[in-house]
Image (cartoon, rainbow, N blue to C red; front, side, top):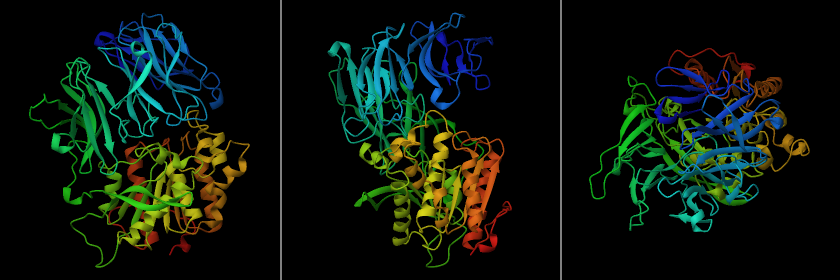
Length: 597
């Protein structure tokens, strides 16, 4: 976590090693901003007040490190060298997105409490930026069933803008004291203006303001994966309708988010990508009305410049809406299908390819149609991929997102199975060679699909959740009560429901080989989750393998381990499906290997 320092004199950042705030000055001096806490405090999501005298940020107090005892607050820290901290807001479980008004007098922030997550119910507050006094609820509420996100003050007017899903879609709203403290919708429509997976990361901002106070916003078309950019006229203009810019026809990448203006306001910077090229940071000159559009330029590429992929090997995703069921009624779920693509190879004539179904994490998250090497890895080797946005995913409105409320382990499992069945019926996949994988919550969906259903013939769980009760007792604060809404029950009072939805308790129904990949330093899904499932599968005589990666946390970060995990999964599926993959692949020690087909 970092923020630009006052007068562009370097950056102020939170140091992971000791969790303290430092000011790295441009001239080279490294200044300790705040000496108190001694590593007990964590700091994030900081902003500098207009006067440049204070940094306002989220402080997490780990004096008592157990998740129920960790205290989150909003604080103001003096930058005069004293490090004096003033608590601006406290008492609720979480705070985020502090934003100081242009005149420095007010602060807007978000707050929520367990068991809600940011996409469930949040309150947008406005209070004194000096001491946090006189807090007013502007939108939403702790138990409002309305999610409010991403507050931002308009620089020229002091009007507060934010996102709210009160209509069922994350749309833009404004609030002003001058307008009798009322909120007003801006450009209402059935689309999400929130960017990808809203609420999961601090600092998300899917809209911004230019130097003339013009509002710039983005929304996504989930069916096509295409983003749309809106540039509204400045407040003093007689015009009201925004200019729309969409995709490559307007010089933009297919999808983009997290827009930020240059200081002069004529250029936008944003994260962007497409199915054919690696994502990166783009710059784009905003065209004047009636002027030709100049294509956006990639400033920073996520892949090394000396790495390229022959376009002939790139599989382009096709959005599919496939039939499924929800609460006993027919409905539709979504996903992206990637056919195999390798100009040097062809499958047997008339034969459909094996299919790998991918379940994203979260679970209240979403997949993307942007270029992904972990998908192209499979399609270039003759394996089709279906990347599923199961019910409960973001990007399709609150009603779709709420399908998972009380139904985790039911709706997600039904949808990945329905997606695989649909692909077989369409001739996209071989019904005898269906695999599934997923990480974290996607690993839970994978384990559930393999134990409770008989659609798949192999699977790979990456740091997946097998025992919900164990997770409820051993995870970090942010997600420590997430499952209460997902399962519709409180731990341990509703232990029976947690046990019923725990795949580890249904391992006797597992009837296909499974690979488990896990980091030994994972604090979100501890290693004992994978170890439990491995021991149960091994004891039942199921072909299984557990690979524990040293020094890895939640999601693999070391290049050698990312490579090994993909190659190990390919090796495993090759043994199950009876083919020998090309290349120098790792040897796997598979327990009960004599039971492989």
